[in-house]
Picture 1 (tube, one colour):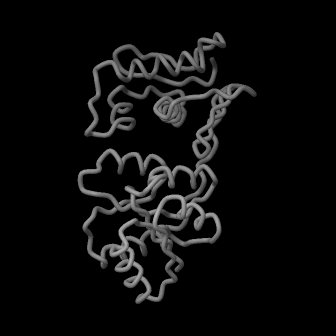
Picture 2 (picture 1 turned 180 degrees about the vertical axis):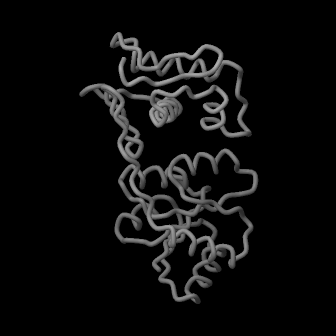
Length: 224
């Protein structure tokens, strides 16, 4: 398989590329985010090994940019043990797996084999709910023909509700899926995010897509 390995540590790059070469893989290397993006655009890779803490753009931005460009090559993130928030950001941006540093080369090879067996993920389907069109890959929302600009958290909430259209999603489920376990989550953070989402997709248009199930959670309705 053809592998792109991206890290700003030259010693680690040398060790990883040598180990993968010994297994008969074709290995290209990049030292920063800009070089990684250029190479990923220029050549078809079976898998990308990507350190999160790169000179700008960092690994998370590299993942996000590739996914926005419809590049669905499997990506394995390399992260430090304390980088919980970065791991969550990377996975949310579209990475397929992560591995903690320091790691054994045997584990790296096994993780890569598993990713390649899994194959490239399919582009997420566009969701249509009433007059809302939600594109998870492009992170865009249309209300009719008008584009609605949402923050990442607002978009994640709308996508979650859209995948359960007509069903009540509990506040606990929303909190668990939108905030990582290390985050400080206040008692009203879900309500605030829902209110901001309504202010963008409902109130300016006199519609009522997002409804409240009092004491339980929220629901997205197709008929507004």
